[in-house]
Image 1 (tube, rainbow, N blue to C red):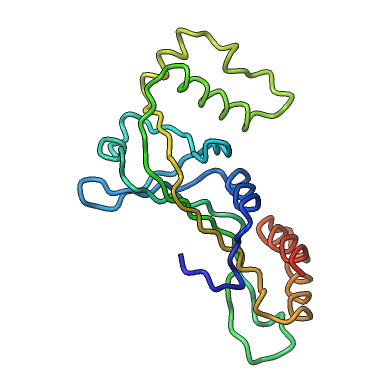
Image 2: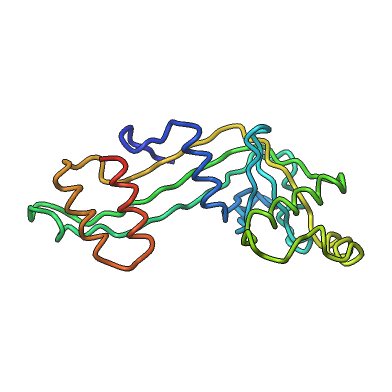
Length: 201
């Protein structure tokens, strides 16, 4: 990923937080000599420096992915920045965004306990705190049959790159104008970018 120095995120905790918050990712690999991608949620284990997820068995991407160096893209909030918000006419449009790229080697997970634990972690992450649904409370025979239709995997992380393009290359007064305009809308991406820009001012 192209990352000018003033847009680079170097703090590991900040990178991990972005991965956990924007966890619906795109996993890129090579399949039969061609680029291939799947969109899927991934769970981060900070202690093991690894990502966990699963493919549908019918998805052929997994068939030659083991031991490949893959790329996972986590896309955070993003929005259009209009030059009409600036104090000058010498300006052009741009786009502000947050993105994390993770590289790693894929390992197929076959241990049934590890598979179940990975799925349980995913359910616990995405279910509301007061949700009555628990994977552990679901019929075990049904869960076993459903697990036959997936292929769990682990990505051992080898490299992380992260970028937050938040108008840091502009003067603070211009950044404040951008924030004001972003906050005047109801768009969630705009509001998230505005909040991140405020933190960086």
